[in-house]
Image (cartoon, rainbow, N blue to C red; front, side, top):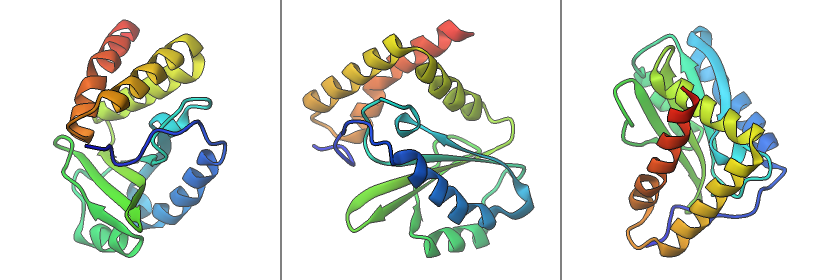
Length: 166
């Protein structure tokens, strides 16, 4: 079973795609938006990735108001399953191709530090970036059960790397 997208070589246009989308999304949050970040593999120069831009919005509100959901829908997003309590997830497809993923977390949620630490570590450590890339490509080749298996199989590497940073 394929992933949501195939892994492709790093595209230097990904940061610009993030910036454009962050600009489109930011007004929806109003004054509760504390920070917005480009996260995930597309935020790491030189790292092969599924060409799906991950955006992390850090907000002061713990819930997602109905008006945000409507605004996100107008911008082409649909609600995904929440990844944990207080970690809300939305996805945007153009045609049948996933283009963006939006993570909305309340300020202080542990997922925020986790995503930023992992991104920043890979940006600064080429050897770990290469190991992660090789793992992702191998998992894509071997994948039989789709995105959930792929994510589960990446988790031990990510957890181990983050545990070493504590």
